[in-house]
Image (cartoon, rainbow over all chains, first blue to last red; front, side):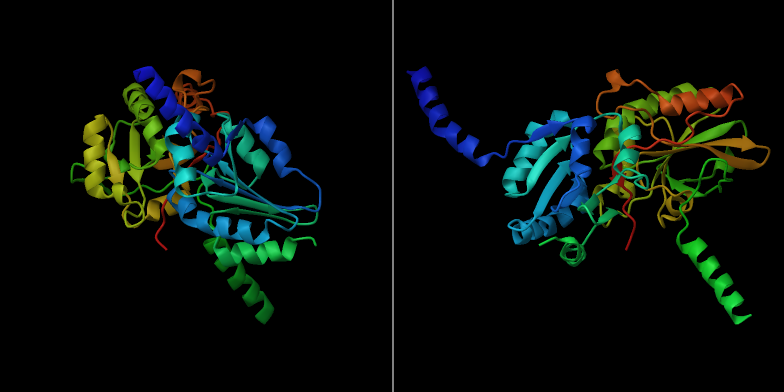
Length: 161
Length: 199
């Protein structure tokens, strides 16, 4: 009886979990690199962040607002989490669910940061937040926080109709 | 003539405001900062030291926390060899409240820090050194009366899984100095929490 009850509870809960949860793709740098090297009409916003990073969490709503404004254009937002892989279930996924994050989130998990930080951008010292905005004609890299207006201004300038 | 003056003024202004902090080979300044024991501490207080492992760190940052045990081990090993660890917290605690002086004392006690843990209250040392994240390491060596920057960067190449570390950048750098060589690499990068500078 107890088992049957558990099964009922699980089957009742499980679909909801699947529907709500964003599937977080975990990538190493080799798998990640093509995302910052595309050469097409789409304007990409690539934001490096983590749930434990106070200024990142503070600017995240701006990125979410921008994403909902531009998502129907030639535009793609990717939030690249640098959370510890071991804390994906305990920190990252609950955070995304609680904040209702709609932009795509991927987890970049690659310990050899000394090598790949400079491959993202030569000037990046490794602190987050850091953001790349680019398409085939434009490129900008920012180490530090961005405001809604700064994001919107750059994207409006870059976006290709 | 007027143009020349403008050029000079602009050059001075730019080189000051765009200062990136130290590079390896630069002469580092000493400091006088409040330690968790209530005393002020300077590098000048260490007569016997050959140099210092200065680590900008803090309480709240998961990267700093992940490295605490390794920093303690490094201090125990290298203090005896003449390179003690000097930890500095430069964060504005109005932005990261658990980085306040009282929280520093609590964290140091909990973890049994074997090294001084100093408060850079006006953040001037982080700015002068060019520290941007935690943990951010500067190895200094004594050259007569001067302090020279010999290594800047990360502790090792795996913050999350200490057992999978392949390159111990910091220890290799200090070992090289102890052997009379220059560290190679003398500059590495790592992901870390931004130092919370006051606006």
